Image (cartoon, rainbow over all chains, first blue to last red; front, side, top):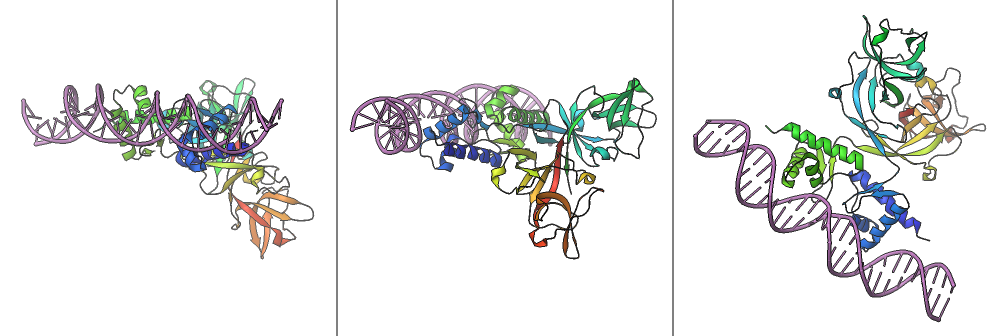
Length: 202
Length: 202
DNA sequence: AAAAACATGGAACATTTGTTTGCATTCTTC
DNA sequence: GAAGAATGCAAACAAATGTTCCATGTTTTT
């Protein structure tokens, strides 16, 4: 009954404006862009879109129309795994990335740059950025970021997590590498579970 | 000389507010949140942050403070590669994803869901979403999305691109598969170059 | 064809918000 | 310790923007 096309034009414009400017348009911006003569009309369109669930809008707040269903999560890049440093401190924050929430849901996510080839058979390559959900435990077979003290090595690594005979086994997905069974089992600390990754080719 | 800490508090707040609401705060929002008594003070902070390059702000526009260095690109997900359908039309649009521009620069990007194991040795797995930069040509060794007509197969595939003896060779990164040398060389069409990928574990 | 519902515009009004100015207070610097 | 700079505040102003009301034309329903 309503010219849905026109509504979609408005929606598209709001999306585009926000993309280009980083903040939403005003009612009058909408008017100007779509050649609408009255602010009341544009105001009405916006309300319709809100009623139909296409966007959110805070009452009386200027420039507060937000298109729904494209939520993003801001995730901090905390450093490099395998580089020998604890990576929990916010100090190591190297910047934030905005990721699509549809893909990477969850609280308390962070990014790590992967160093090394130890997970190559799981499709995690040197230089990839992995998305990690911070949690202190893991289930068998999950890929985790873990830390443990061991005479030889210290720091965080990405490995597949197993518990065999009551012992934590960190399994590299690389046929040329052996499982790690930390001597000091008590020192093993799970930093989080790997829930995704991002790669960009040079 | 200036209390840089205080400035950073303001910056953090702006960031946080925008994350939570989807649009930037007003000067008075900043005042309220950081217990600043005068709008002039908050206004001043914001200006300082702008001068120091931390944020952008459109003059006289309400709620237009945007933290810099976190730009995103909106990229459409156009469909599935290897599924036998041309994927250039906007019709196939399955939604938009917001990706960090720092990782995935460029105009005319789009996403495709990968189907099949043909690029597994290049770390591209079944189910991955690849980020493609639309372009009609490619250089030797680049990973591309290409289409070609051939009695047997039709549709788009991801392969590594080579030109050998004047002929286009599409090389699967999977030791159990053979190179594809399209019979009808003229029909080969490069849709774009793969510049990155995204994966989320279930 | 009349009545009702709808769509849009014009104009005014009310808030929200950005911006300016001047003053008091604190901190620097000499 | 005084001059000067830097900082923060209060208050007012001006502009941007959201919101409402009503009129007019258009479409749909009866």
